[in-house]
Length: 229
Image (cartoon, rainbow, N blue to C red):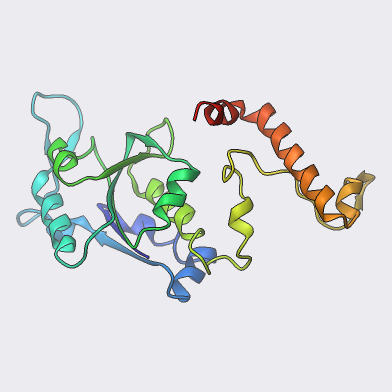
């Protein structure tokens, strides 16, 4: 998979893809993340990217021309499955969206800044708008990093244990069950006996029931959403 991220401040994305799982994905040739500086397509001597909004009001708006030129430049090189805009008024991101995007070959992510991007870019270029939550960030870079990380770990071969991602929270609309490791008795706090039994079927049943109970207590909305499908 290849992901092209368009940013006003590309330096914000130097760290997230240079370590841990994302670095291993790149080293294995399974994930390419390219961060591009939108200012390379800026206008005039000062590489202008933003301007005042029509109708007045606080905040600057990212202009059409630099974004259109940048997007069309990369579209001339490859076809994108989705051109994504990170925005607070996008569709709420979830595991189902991550699963679907992990099957793509080429993605482009536009990181918003200032007051956002000119609406005409959204109308004519953007194919998918994503929000990672009901709050506002200074820009879309951190949100883009969240999306790429959640997608990248799902690509076959990225994780050391191929089944690991299948048992993450939200994969089956349930939160993950409690997990334990050695020692079996720490300060008198003991691991549930069932996990030490070696009885695989009973352990899986216990994990399912624990997931269900945890979801009921902490995220009952997940169960309600599933019932409505």
